[in-house]
Length: 300
Image 1 (spheres, rainbow, N blue to C red):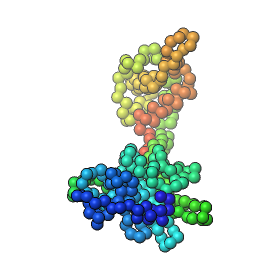
Image 2: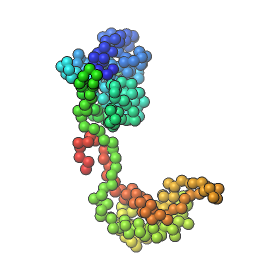
Image 3: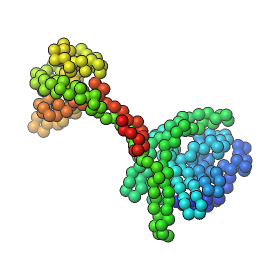
């Protein structure tokens, strides 16, 4: 279904279900196979149709409880709009399968993105939960829809343009809080230089299986150790970091010795400093977390 007219015709061609759970007045119209009555097309009015899902339930779930995944709307006789939403979970197979089948051409849905003319639009899950209706059905209910609104423009009989009318959604991500980290820049640099000197000396006594350090690296403790050159747990922190690096290193097959061996570690200063920097960011909690948001929202 790629136009409002096609949606109208599709709806009109479906015979409403009638059973012990449904009357013709309920107007339950499965969008595909009749055994999958939880996937429906609903006519709101002459200018609005909803394609969506209810919970899978053997009893009666009225159309009012449908979760709207795709909404087609018409304004006048020439303007058509499509709203596309995800479910309340990014891993709902039924929702993903529905979007893959019913987003209008030339759109395509996959990997949490709407694909259109070489562009990818991240479609995050909406905010909501599963609730039990008064009739005992288990249905999705959103408190905040995260959606895209597109307008379909028929430029010529052989040319259709889809225009996005809402801002893009952006994934949640974490960034280094540079302002907070700047206070520790000198201390981190000194620790990294010292670590490059000490690591070759200490590495012989470090094993993935044997913990040779006595430290619980809370953000407050690690920040204190970085600033205090004479802290008694400075070596413990370094060996903790070294053990972390070793545990994330994979063995490689040495063709000359015909043995599996760990690659040489802690000899490449630049690489080791990068590893130290990443561990400092993590254990000092120098990250700030950006939630799912629209691109016009502030990133700070």
